[in-house]
Length: 432
Image (cartoon, rainbow, N blue to C red; front, side, top):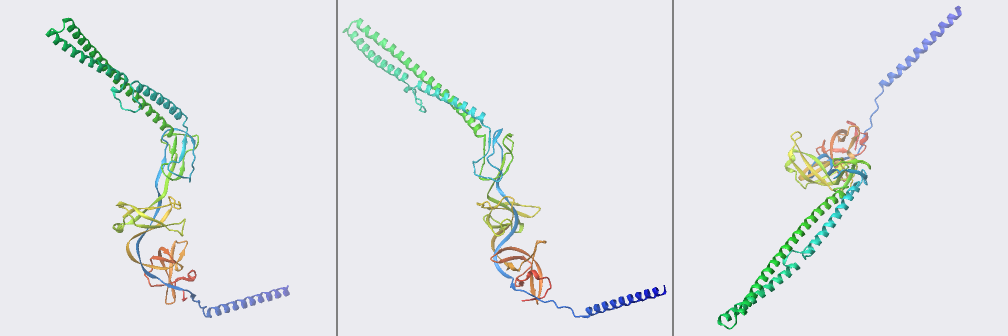
């Protein structure tokens, strides 16, 4: 038992001595590390360019959303059952293209019935015109009616006979007074004159009766013409009912919604499809009140959209709202964009630059000098001063030909880094 205890005490003592040695070595190494000289940071190699000041046309930037110049929710002119929907969402249509068809069977039957009535009215008119001797569409003259012409000829002949009889009666009356003829002969010629006068009066009455008959016949023509006009009006109404069964696009554009399907029964208040005119498009911009006097129709505008980041779209100011918003103190300006290839679509967000009259100074740097932070939606450049890089947040404008406009953050003349900007941070040493 004594030997075991002695051995155990020896083992514990050895372990304590080993731990003390390890601790001493570790402390010595830490002190050596703390007393060694710090590692030097190596400067970053960069290239630089000068922020250049240029004279550029005065411009204003604004954001807006493209809108259709026209938008129409089509409703049917008449109620009925939908039998066809030849267009779908996204389809392009021209003015007059069919977008919905309704059942037109009843309308066509009424049209055929109205057409038959018109044919009957036309036949009645021709019959009435033939009775008084006039052709279709010609002017009415009673004296040209055959019956009137015959009565007039008889009347003129009777008047001629009466004139001759009156002359004979007067001549024989003188001969009777002179005793050259007998009383019986004188009475005969006087009787012949009276008879001729009676015949003339009868012919006149027949002539006037023929005129009255002709005029009454023309009134019948007028009545037939009125009946024909009424029948044609009913035919036009029936034709409209047939046409109303076909709903057509009022203008060229695109279908953005189709709200009915085949088999549905629609009323006059139902919405069938929505058509929008996408060429041209309009963009509504808010311009600062301070520039209201410089905004006018016809100013050129350049727009950018996210869908086509490398393209620009040209438009011009087409309308200016005469009232300035009391809340935003801004002027609403409408810009019209031609859109023949339909790249632009209603609802697209756009950044637009309005070119004003006059010139102004602007700062430009190479595009390569711009460092962006995707998480913060901000941009910065690194200005090199005294061998150090200093980050500056900048507001950017439009870019072209490898340079970009800096709206704020630089005043011009600064040297900005254009190489290794992804390695730079504020205050780091650089070599040019």
